[in-house]
Image (cartoon, rainbow, N blue to C red; front, side, top):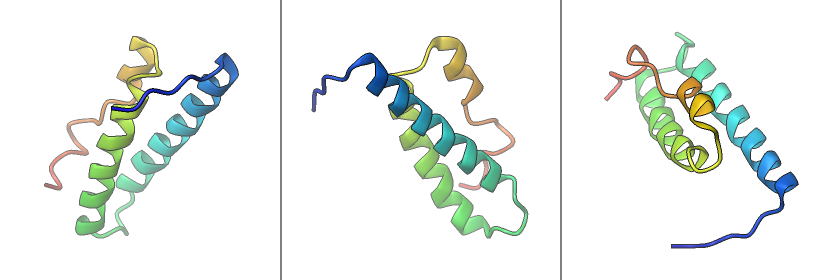
Length: 75
């Protein structure tokens, strides 16, 4: 386990970066040109980033980034 002290501004910045990455992955998962194997890896990455984001976001914000059931299934 690792502990980190962040200022309010740093927390907002980390939250912004995580949200942006989650949105980018969601967009890529919906792209039909991307191979299913690549989407599998992207989905794994999404779950890791979402796990980190859950520690920063509000409950309402967290629900916005839950991976939709339609996206799951590449496994």
